[in-house]
Image (cartoon, rainbow, N blue to C red; front, side):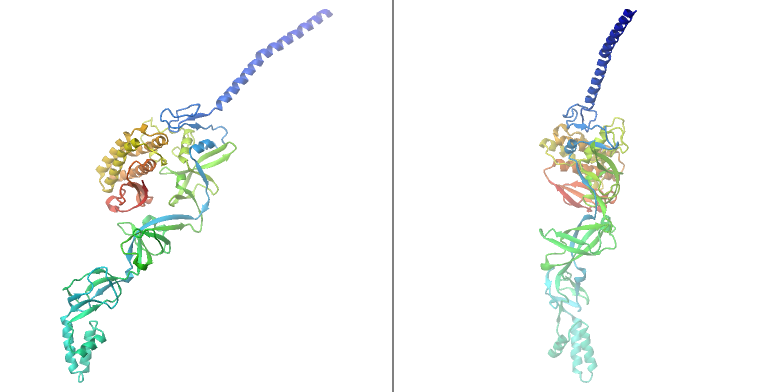
Length: 592
């Protein structure tokens, strides 16, 4: 019995050992394989995926060029671990490649630099009209041309007056009976005084007992003759004007103030101005008067400066250009941001706010309410707080990354499916017209520049047609411009120029492709705003023409928001208002 029990125990122990060995072999290796598979999956997930900002369907495991457009591929950032699901994360490398720059917003005084155009004019209070107090015929003119300086008391002309000769004869007759009728003698003298003869002149006439046939006309004031209204031999009436005389020791500068700038300009504001005909010299003054009424045709009011004219440097009708550093909200400081930070869709204005976390840097879109425009910056009324950091450069790249990641972006505020720039659904309502484009200056081959010339030629024809109020010609020029855009060979643009041209041409096409269907010139002018903005970006990037191109601005266009356009001439020919306000605007920049 004992032998049986001992044998049974040995068999059981052996069986258990064999079972444990088999279990380790079978299940232990299986777990090891599962662990290895899991680690392999983790490694695969951590690999960086590279894509194209213009063609997000491209996915590669290593950096390189897009096979469709040749642009540099960018890393598709993982969204794992982001604190804010609405933010798009960017690595430091990606930020450097996109040239992203940021700034901390803060409150401060809001200054706006306002440019004014005007002319030098004579001070109206120092203008006078020299008239003749004697009727008769002009026998001699001592001042024969406009611009001659005269002094008070100087003889201007000699006049023969039959009435005055008769009055002198009456004086001589009254002198004979002076002793018996002194009142008659005095009356005869007073009659001569009515013609502005002095007591000294009358005494000389009485003493000589001989009548004077030609009487001198003396200047009442000193100044420059600005207008000559008589000639030798003319017959004049008593009180008729002979000359206009201006004292130019003090002059006025009358500057045009557009209706949209009226709230920024006040009496007493300092103005720094230059005069085109006096290069290298800067003048200063203060506004002493602003017209209370706006001209109904030009929609401008006049702001007046008074200046002492030392050495007569300032001459009437000289052109002057002034600048006012206007200050608003002096009691309450306001937030301001550079224009480059704001992306404007036409209805909404957005900025990208930077966030720092343990996972790195990310940007989240924020809608803001814009206040007044301050030259190169905007006042922010709502949407930002002091101390927040925003992107001021590279915002287009951030927005493109947000679209690729399906995060809220300028054109897709709710997030979701990324925009690819293509229209596969037949929808013609494209938002590409309002997308911001870069105007980074880059080099371009001569062949590429030559390919752009027809596009610019048709643009200038469109501009001229709008300035001439010619609807049919404007529509035809717009169609021709669209055809020119379609014929440009994209392969001529290399490197950075390629990505710039893709961005700009893609944004320009929606503005041009439906011009032929527009019903009136007002609609074309509305399209011309976005067309001009994009053409300015193209001109600044590539400088395609050998001649200078002028960027001109009308502050009253686009509902007083202001709008730009390009011109080959310095002279203003306003395409947004045509003949009704043809000269409204100014040159703001020259592209050479």
